[in-house]
Image (tube, rainbow, N blue to C red):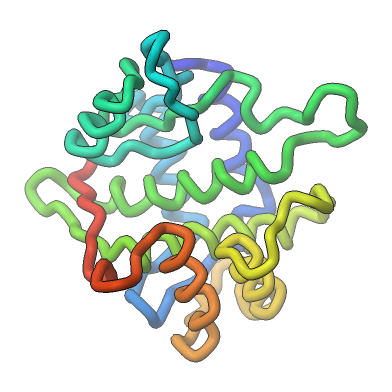
Length: 228
């Protein structure tokens, strides 16, 4: 059974006013992210075509669980091979059902960094929902991660929320996407899809290549999306 707590939290996030202002197209890779496409992920969650669950691991796996969207059977098999028994395609997998909540003992309303990751993973799900088993999509992994980082950061700059001071490492993909999001915030408006030129995404591209090990001949690696 899907985890209803996580499903509800993610759907509330997908329906948030800030996410309605995330509308852009990356010239580098051509990927389009819009609030309308996030509603498709929301609908897929309601229809149980996409589910949320807490990772169930074997006792001796030693696997550190990270939040992620599992787009295909190959990725699910890979994750299962690492000892995560609950991995199946079309699933958001989380370390626990408190993911996205405010850390205990703080005055924060939510865990901003974890919500950022939830939006990031939901962006990957957009491309899966837009594909189908009859017409799968093979998306460049670099473009996939660039789009997901920028979508999450654009969501954040429209929330008015404060970020944990030590949560961002300067020079990594999260930081570079945040800088870009602040730069294009006023251009990326509701109901307008903003073209983000390649000239503005070079620093983000380099950070993604470093963070996801997509350099040194690995630039052509693709992520398979075969629909929900």
